[in-house]
Image 1: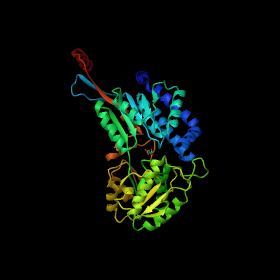
Image 2: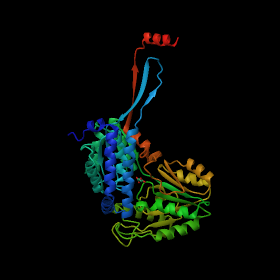
Image 3: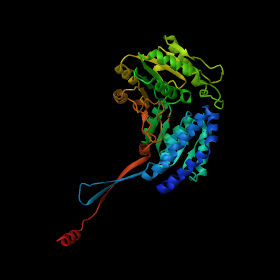
Image 4: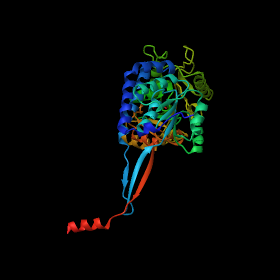
Length: 442
Ligand code: SIN
């Protein structure tokens, strides 16, 4: 069965594609409130955060509406006088985009907008946990005039659809955000048809707080990175590493701030922490916390399911965490902040890099020398210095080591959807023209 037709879309001019994207952006922004409500209903994040995600998600469409017009080629000086060498960038072809539930809109637009801008059509497989936001976004793409067949959404079993996308020779690229295990499988499967893959996989972000940090800045930044989306982001601080001189002061102030966070229904007044996505997520968090307690860690606040029941978990701070505990080794994906103590800068860098993951890291210090030194030594794709929220449409997002391949957002986000081709053109040089030119000059 033919599911998609990439011809028509790729043949439009960049300016035409740009106009469609801009219209899509305008419609999403015009429906910001409704999309935010839908997201809170199906995903659980507090309404303010959900509406914030709508703007964040839309920003990729706005950015790539502009970037569509900047797919420049090159002319390379050829090695022979009768040759000319042109570099041309062309759409890679049909893209399979497999997206997660934690950012039901932004992870779609971060993939689909650059793909459309480059002239590719897309088949989206959204998470079965958050299909409604994906469908609403696709409906708005149709209202924006984007021709049917350019943006496709397929609902159903992740395994079946993932397998079909990977197996199809027509799909030339797979872009995925999700777990490292699934990413590895998609990468292996894509080898059969030698597809390009970009993968945004799990993280284990260290958040390093040095003795010389501004305490207020460090507290604000750590709370922001750890508790965004109830700890369910790939860039959430997973390990809070605090230098011994500031340890007690930070741990006390941080626990107090966490204790005061309002948990509840995302539509509730003043709620900043919603539920976790499902029972499996709660069970995982409970297992990690119990593992840490059984090995000597101390709960400073939280540490158990919330009295609201269902999938609510108390925002938690745990101290005396050691690097061998699950909380340090694995991605938590929940509202639990483990605090580890370190003595020296070298020790902090070693602890931070002691993982297969390499997505995001955070550093809090007032020393400019230390900022550069530590940021460069950290093996991570994204480093925030004195800042806990670093994602933006204008900067490349992506990891090193087992956190993934490729970059999303910014001008670099276009590369993954383009093929670079060359035309080497031979032409005959007329001796007569040369003669006339020389004749005119004399
Ligand atoms: C993610 O958690 O996968 C994305 C987070 C972001 O875009 O900031």
